[in-house]
Amino acid sequence: MFTDQAVTLVTPTGSRPEAFALCRKYVARQNYEGAMQWLIVDDSVLSLNDPDVVSRLTIDNPRITVECIKPPHHWTPGSGDTLALNLKAAIPHIMHDVVLFIEDDDWYGRDYVKSMMSAFAEYPDAELVGDPNSMYYHVTTHRWRYMQNKGHVSLCQTGLRRSGYGRLFQVCARPDIIDWRLWNSPLKKKFLPVGNVIGIKGLPGRSGIGIGHRPERNPELWNDDTSYEALERFVGPDVMNYRQ
Image 1 (cartoon, rainbow, N blue to C red):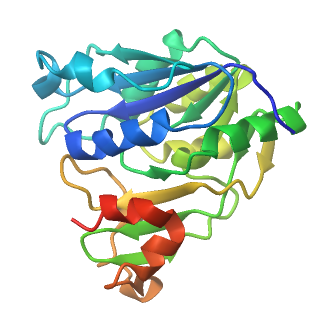
Image 2 (cartoon, helix red, strand yellow; image 1 turned 180 degrees about the vertical axis):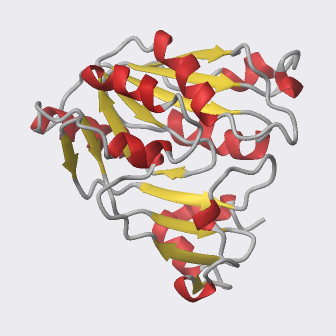
């Protein structure tokens, strides 16, 4: 079922310019025909006075309106993870009845927003919609794995209806396992094989807290891909974005 309902995209970021440059491309090419508000929460002290920030946020898609939020907190090396703070900073700016979380270092196919919004239209009672079949690719070690989530969905594959925004704010009172606690809340949930997302790990810049996404911790769960053949099957021509 297709819908042209307006949607808000939220991307927490900071000090990951290479990753964000790819994210910008993936958002710009979305083929969804409804209006999209893209909220970018940039908490890096390094980018506060960056003269190129405006040109970087110009996007070649007339359906997308971009807003960059500078939160009161600033991330610096060693200051800890600020994902929860960034999400809380975005909530007051959300204009539309559905929000999708677009993580700055992940790969998104051009159908992602369209597929997620079709799911929300098909299941009007669902407050949380997402695909639990997370797949991660670690670019520096050329290894990939399926996470096989049970009962929750990674944030990069999660959509939330307005009735759940208050719960999101509560969940962000703590900095850890935001996606797990959101999906284990009393919100009405719908798990769907939406696809169109690959969790990319190991890009340059500021690191995340993805402890479970480090191949050295449990190497037996990861698959080798030294020739990039698997990644090319997953992302097609976008494999060129990661060969370097």
